[in-house]
Image (cartoon, rainbow, N blue to C red):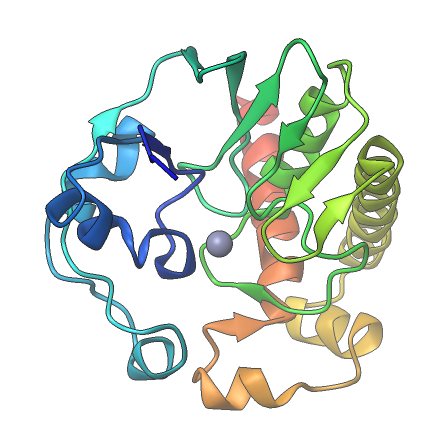
Amino acid sequence: MNIEQVVITHYHEDHTGNASYLQKTLGVPLYMNQGMIESCKTKADYPWYRKFFWGKRKPFIANPIGDSFTSKRATWNVIKTPGHSRDHLSFLNNETGQLFTGDIFVNEKVKVILQEEHIPDTIESLQKILTYDFKEVFCNHAGHLSDGYHSLKTKLNHLTELQDRILHLYHEGRSSDEINQILFPRKYPITKLSLGEWDSLHIVESVINHEAKENAYQAR
Ligand SMILES: [Zn+2]
């Protein structure tokens, strides 16, 4: 099979680990969000456990992706969907309604997230993507979702509900640690192993920090 081009949903190493190989060995052009191109030109800078599990992402040079791109048979919309990472993109085939969602779905319920993730942005991205006409979804972790529209909607409802519960406790005067303890009493091994890079606390804190910022903005 001839690979003509590679489009990248976001910079995480489990999505870009082969980018250098594809570029250097096969001479394939790479495209991604402008935001992380510079960082991908340098050696991967992330903790040892990620290098151990997902390997060391070698440097590569990608081109900035536009608002759309074409493959042999279709034109694809590039939709900005930040939240999981700030450079996250989704790709929609306009003719067939097939949607590639990178890591914005993964699973319906969220228990722990990476420190860089931002739940209010993910909610906004899901709301935005649900305004498009699509059914089938290709998720990089859950695989093919034949009723992907419904799956993304279920995820949005779950996150909105979770956000409401966090804000309710926050307005009662609870600290983020207390809220984390109430909503996520179970601790996962990945939190210890990653020295806190993966933690349910980041879910709580991203919601609270966003709320505090909004309140400060309104008070001006
Ligand atoms: Zn990711």
